[in-house]
Length: 171
Image (cartoon, rainbow, N blue to C red):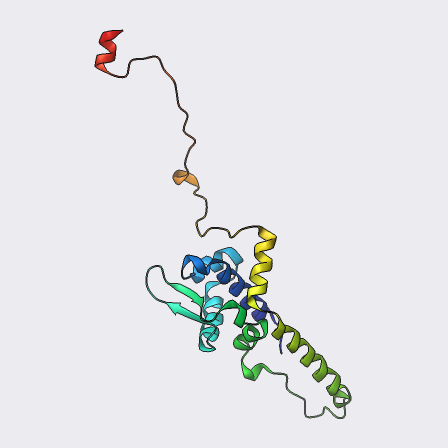
């Protein structure tokens, strides 16, 4: 199992999507903006996760990605394996016996197995729940309006000027 930046970004994006999926499909542009991950990189990651059945896509306006399975049934190991292609596994060099690699191979195999077991025991649901506990609530998809679109506070002026022609006549 390779723990790489690709793996970290994939897990982060899945947590982000899991937090907001009850609001409908989550766009990669929104994830990109919130998590500061390029859209093209997210497209590569989500393509691989879609091929592994972790997410499904919805096309068109309002489209995006949703979880294909319940978050309780998706582990961190599932996400990591989905984004790391099989050809990225560590290759044993041809001169491994001469360099002492073989003598420690069992150690690395056991360590890798323990790490894999641990990652398999962590569900996406538990990570989403931890994030909700930390933040208190899910941030909305809508960012506050700024610039000319911002709502200015309305000040109510109480005046004693008549507001109609009829009120003017009676004063």
